[in-house]
Image (cartoon, rainbow, N blue to C red; front, side, top):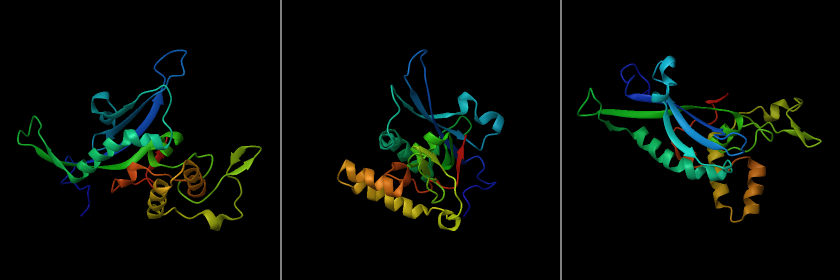
Length: 207
């Protein structure tokens, strides 16, 4: 049964998640991050108003967390999203007995570095997250030129394989073995992948 239908237009919520950093102080390299979501059921003119944005986490500085450290902030968020996917009653002004609400992440909209951290991929300077294209390095500068082997890499990545390699990363016993695993497979363990409908490959809008 489809999740989004006319019947459930106001009870099945579609969420777009975003993560970004900003510098709250002048003349300082202190970065603070925020993870938030917008409700796509709302009209575009309403969904980005401050009172309609769902602030999911504030990440204190002074520096951005490393790729795997972001899990510490995502873990409670994912737990709540799993709960929301199953659904629960929410009491409102118009419905004192509550309405059964469900929600699903339908996209991720961030800049390239933030999207990589949210979805568990390494730097965009190394490999594409959608296909198997790898970067070329010339004088320590990466580029994605060259199409002679187009048929070898223009293949969509398999989400099940990505999950498998992410769990393998977790089983690595040493920091060195984890680095080697990431270099080979370009993914690492990410709590967001336990979210049953986390569509990381096809619905990442880079802004």
